[in-house]
Length: 193
Image (cartoon, rainbow, N blue to C red; front, side, top):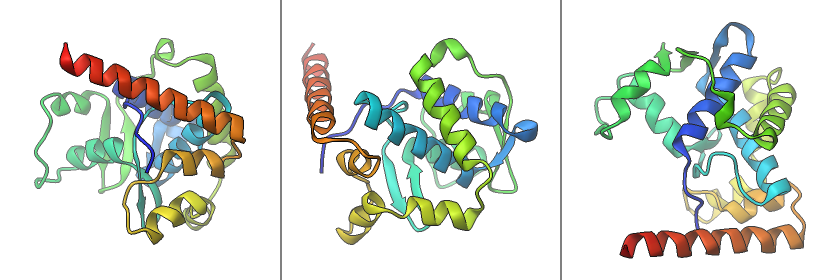
């Protein structure tokens, strides 16, 4: 399994707000949000060598699910089994989760948190996936990266598999590996400081 990218929580939150703001009434089910986010992250990874959010995707029954985002929404819908992170209570100012899976934005996205390339990939994913049904999104997301994680009995999907599935060529795969190595070195340096 390849290393992970660091999650950028503010960028993730504003990406989800951007998705909700782009959809009718600013309300969407978690499944569709997660698939739009997955395909946007995959596209950005394939084109630019890094994902938008850095979230780890878990190969769940109905397709890839961003683990940190899912944790936030589960907490907001009242899952009492979760031990909230210190900042989790702040997320109620961002989103409301009703009927266990309907997400409503509580604020507008700050577009200064998202680069032009982030907005490009998010917009493309929204346009491509907003009209797809639950079944269509499941089928579309059950591809090689998801299957590899499920077949190897791993929960977490490999970022390199996600990039390859998205069409990344060998040069881009090498670049992604380099980005992961650099990030790991920076994380190790920060840990010893």
